[in-house]
Length: 175
Image 1 (cartoon, one colour):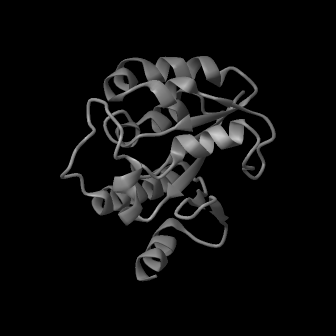
Image 2 (tube, rainbow, N blue to C red):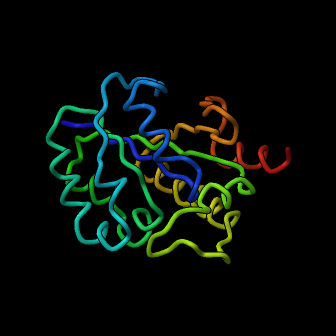
């Protein structure tokens, strides 16, 4: 059975970049030797996620690979995908990686995105970051998962091993 590794974080935090770096061997994730990227999670927009992503994840679930999945807020909210995967495949191991970037960096990181949501000049990145942290913390509590935290605010992503999500965020806001 596969292992699903979900990557969550605010828009522009660098989830897709980190997934691709792991796949290309440029960044190591503890405990992950070989990984397959769920390309659908990188490519599907909100509407496609609702219609197709769960079915695609079911195809990956029967493999023996570590599957890197770019999560979106809709996955935790309306779709509840990690929960539904847990119900459908209770033996499938799931991990959560929270990718953090300082909220003041996020607007410039998404500046050139063009899709059915961006550009959105009134987007509140602080609120999105806080909401993602709360939703990921709840997911981890509900599924008894200890999240891995990656700070992607600098030139290179850094794994933070001694923090919980809320504690790290409080420290990051204070600095």
